[in-house]
Amino acid sequence: MVAVAAAFAASCSSGISGSPVAAEVAPPTAADSVRQAVTDLGEAAVLRYQGGMTASGSHPATFDITAAGSGEMVGTLTLDSRPATLLVVDRSIFLKAGAEFWAALPGISEGPSKGTAVADRWVRVPAGLIGVEPADVFTPQVLGQNLLEGVDRAGDRPLADGEKAKVGAVDAVRAKTGKGAVTVASKAPHGVLKVELSEAGESDPTSVRDFQATVTDGSATAARFYQDFAASAAQVSAPVDVLTTVQESGHTFDACGAQSCSIIVNFTNPSKVAVRVSVRGNWVGDNAPLGSCETVAGPVAPGQPGAATCTLAGPEWAGFYQRANSVPGSHPYSVQWSTLVLADPPDLTKVTARAQAKPADPAARKTEGSNYVYSIGYTDGGTDVVWKYGSVATKFWSEHADQQLGTCLGSTGRVCLTTLVTATDDAASAQGLVLKLVTAYKQRTGACPAGQWVACGG
Image (tube, rainbow, N blue to C red):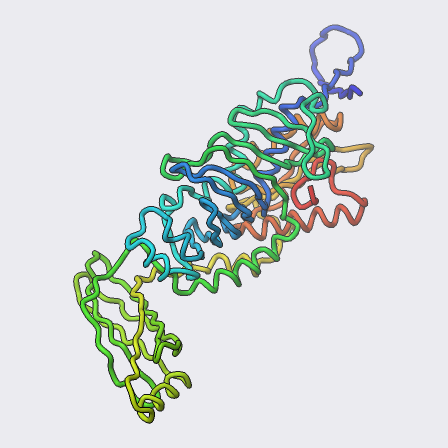
């Protein structure tokens, strides 16, 4: 079906007489549809990715990661078949994994013993250590920008003429782009279902190859994501810094009596910054486990000595001490300990605020902020019709929205306009307003706006 649109202009010139003729409006091309789908993806409040890639250093990786447009990420990352739990806050990367993950990871001193020491503890790692910078790969806006490169390769034929595909049970179309391919739903608004990139990332130490992932929009549950994320991030209270170490200089047992026993570990800080040091010890008596102790010492200034006293107290030690003093014979006891430098925990100020954020209020409309909520729509018989609501973190929201007017025109046959709903300084508030507007539209009409993908369930 070919849509038509007409425009009129007034002039005082005599001109050429005649009647205005309606101009044909072509439907969106495949490139137009894919460009719009990728633009929508970049505006998502929350996306879930499930797939694989080759991390820097040729390490095969799989992942199941949920990422917010504001940068928070949580999920699992498996490197060389070894899984880890991932948490990203303000680009800082925290991992929790088993001993085999850390023992096999290049760049960590002490090899297997270090792996055992940090097993199942939260560890802050630099992106270069794991061969991927999550913020440069999984952040929705960044992924959208990568996918837009060379999007014209999708072609000028209708999207329906493209390569047919299926993602799960959804009929789809696969279109090539400059760096790979994008698979979108056959049905409008053609939401992105799968992405393929030959490469992604900003620099060699953290760039990845052969990135493939299915994509699910989680914007409708963004508030719950922030709340759950804040609760998970709060558990990262004493992460380990595996790249910084102290030099141990000896140990002594101290004050071992009926109720408790302590080990004092002496060390020196050879680094150029003050450090906090964690000591964990696993105790054994008469070849049976007696329990564990844990303590934190510091901060210890650069080049200075320090000591940590780790004390075991509990019924196991009390029972062992009683046996050692009442049953004839030798009763050996020992402790295996690890001495680790602690990194600063993540700053959860912004995360907590986003978890508590309320949708921005369009009635108190603002024109300045860091996040802008806009609408695209047209007039039909005197009635305003919304084609799409969007949110973008740039003061150039108008240019961003105007680039989508052609797709709106081609899809509806109507001259479309953009409108600023409001601005806010909080990403979660902007995203919350988009969800609120989409939900209200659905309640009024029974469906999402025709061009809406974000917060509409795909």
